[in-house]
Image (cartoon, rainbow, N blue to C red; front, side, top):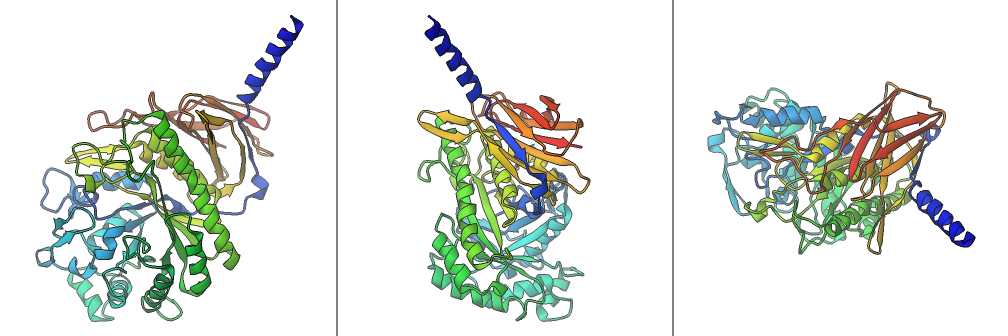
Amino acid sequence: MKKYILYFVIVFFSINHSQSQNKISINISQAKDTINKNIYGHFAEQLGHGIYGGLYVGEKNKTIANKDGIRLDVVNALKKLKVAVLRWPGGCFADNYHWNDAIGPKDKRKPIENISWGNMREDNSFGTNEFLEFCKMIKAEPYLAVNMGGGTVQEAAEWVQYVNHANGSSYITDLREQSNIKEPWHVKYWGIGNESWDCGGHMTVEYYTNLYKRYATFMTSYSNSEGLFRIAVGPGTDDFNWTESLMKNIPLKMFEGISIHHYSVIDWSNKGSSTNFTEAEYFKTMEQAYRMETMIKGNSDVMDKYDPQKKIALVVDEWGGWYESDSGTRKDFLFQQNTMRDAMIAGITLNMFHNHCDRVRMANLAQCVNVLQSVILTNKEKIVLTPTYHVMEMYNVHQNALMLPVTVQSNEYILGDKKLKAISASASKDKNGYIHISLVNIDAKKGQEIKIELGDFSTHNIKGLILSAKNLQDYNSFDVPDKIKPEVFTDTKIDGNILTAKLPPFSVVVLELK
């Protein structure tokens, strides 16, 4: 009998011990890197209703408040989100886009056929002028993607002249003045090509490298005194040989960043529904989201060999969830709803970006409005802020803050014979001395208690916000737009330098410590 009692005591304490292993240490004394605000960038491709009907409704629209055709409700929402940088016009679309067809009087612009996304005829009423003015309205830095597939070096160089050079310096800037643009926009960020290994031309890395050097040379002066931030196309898979070839064969003075893409896709041939998914599909999505760590680490290791001073930025200019287009919408418009699953993707991905901010200095969520994992959905005059929007708003306290290294010991989220870390975390210290800690529990069924060691930091002033829901599949609809929104989080306690927080299943929490 005593043996059985002893056995059950051991099992009892083992079970309870196994469920209390979430520990986070914040290493304040080791902090040295800043979380670049450009990690909170977005991507707006000329695709579906991302631009037309999303950002832009046209000057003649009388039912939706707009300024020069740009939706003011979208502007206000993105300003609140503190969007740092916005990438445009693509994506695959960029390698078919000729910027000079979409400037000047709108009745004189050339209509185009969007062969990348549905062969739609577009009137080009939203072009360079409109995009750059939109960026000014939301206070975001523009990031222009150059047509390397169907364009020319001259076309790219003249685009730089059109947006950056002084009035009167050439006939190109005269064209800008004819549109009543008084001053150049001084665009800093330029992507040279897009997915050149695939839709951008199916190039070999050797061919791309030689072509890139031509563009990078002629788009700016010999010494780049204009300070362009030129971003070369990196891999979209864990093909680190592509990255190695770029780093080895492009002089460091000729580029400032390398882009990578990674989507949390279950299966490219069967992506699944955005809302009607099983826990098994959710688990696979989380597996893919965590692969971002491999992408960042693998590319960073290669870059460190050739650039130990970390002068070249790793730019994740496409990331997010990708499912089948929602029923009743055009497949090639890539419209999908946004559930708590997407909030989980956003939370753990941003934590990874923070923790690798020594190399990751820009990222662009795909995409901004009405396409893929968007932060905003629109339907005529209606607008919805998605769970992803709320995560990015909760997290924007980390922008330009000092990253505090964290050590995370996490319980496992187990499904069948597969395991993932349940807890993801990052932390930072802002200019006012406040510490912010972002916590994610991806476990679909179990809440998690987390003990956080604060070191020498002492506080009893703790505030928190939480994003959670009843079901993983819950989302904000046009009929119920506020089903999921941040709430005050109070399930914390402090004992000396140990902060304890209890997170419900599939939830995101941001704590502020003063």
